[in-house]
Length: 370
Image 1 (cartoon, rainbow, N blue to C red):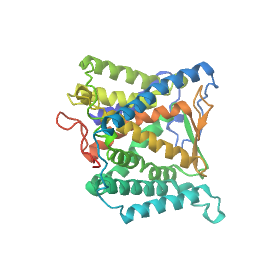
Image 2: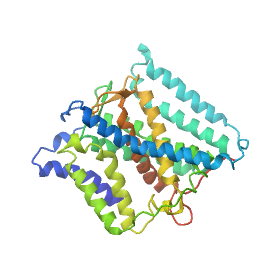
Image 3: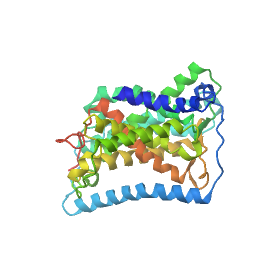
Image 4: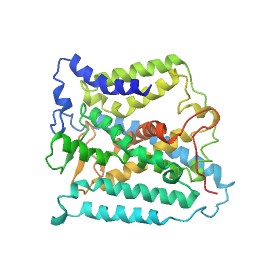
């Protein structure tokens, strides 16, 4: 199934370019430095539309978290942390802070290394997150499943390269402050930076599940039984595939599909294969598989954008219609893209961590404080 999904995601945008009679070679450029996709200017009607579209899922996320908090407020008695904060957690915080300062500095002696501070910042942050999780629950992803944790790093590099590839057809972000590199050197240093995406999101998921409002509170809401017809799943694959096919032809209107289409294809493929999807636990009132990964990616996204803003090697955005009202570099509506992205991260990382959605365990393993 995953091979088929990868082929669809990779092949359809390029097929659309070829079918439209355009030269596909610019989309395969390495390093991808040429900016050849013109973008529409800011537009108030479109900005309002995208803000409303972004507000709906974000409001749903806030509602779910608030509901979870209210559910456990009266019944949960706060217990003392189960574990101690490990020394390596503090080492991770120091590593993160040290390279954060270097990334935002402009020391002459450090300039040759300054474009490569992303990896140590995030490696330290990931270690620190796992340390907090140990203190709150007595365990964490790093300690419980060390092999899976390590495998997430190379898997993450390959995973993010897919999104880098899709971005070539819409060119919504681009990198500056990166030294001139050949294809091999660029691929190597970029891959090192990309290794932290999945470990970061999955470690944040592990941490969030130690908070009762996000675990116990979200596991027993009102049951919702969504339509479960395989025809709906088939329609989802057709629609998402058509969007990817056309994304390079109409980048100003379909750019959001970079984040939505892969998720729709994954969920629809799982349904057609007879496997429970992230929506399956809703029939039991369990919204954790939808809320926790989305929230984890949004939190990680905040730190991604914050640490990026003053780094020498950084990314900037070129998003049609909404290039105004930023939080750091990201236009405000763009933060909604982290929500489906978190669900895709969880789905892909589950191949290594053993997380699963099934009839007996709605959200894989979990750590609950108290």
